[in-house]
Image 1 (cartoon, rainbow, N blue to C red):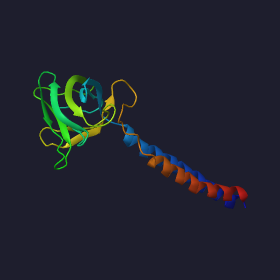
Image 2: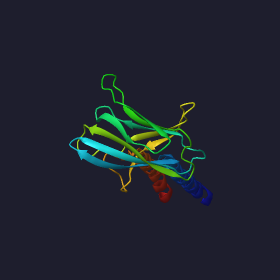
Image 3: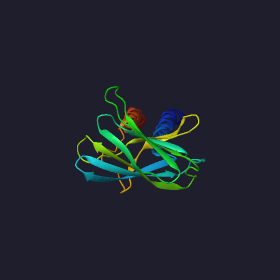
Image 4: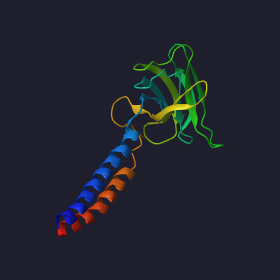
Length: 195
């Protein structure tokens, strides 16, 4: 009789350990980025604001030679590059509500990019913010300047620490799936205890 009661217990242990491994694996891609882009935001008066970005090549194995930061249509207008480090070429494209399409700020290294382990600041963009409150996080992409392939992407983060205004809060999908998995295993455990 011992082997019969032990078999469901082993099944329970295997299932519960797999659920934990899957939950950890699901969380890892969302928290690991090879690049971080931080911003300081300053009100220049009225609805006019300015972002100043710092780009850090945290773990990419190659120089960052181009990056793009996206400005949501309906929230931003009148984009203007106000400062750029030496040997970088900025480009701003307005959000277009007629298409509709987001605008962007793009910076291209003319000489050398941002080497692995280095960071570079001083990329500034002024704009009119059409939303309520303080402008916050945006999407960014690290781009190969020759093939235009996206090499890394993510969301900008407030340089002041912690989530800035507008920073997306991750959806609880992973937690819900984990909870459903545990809820599905609990009845099996109760059956094992009864036997």
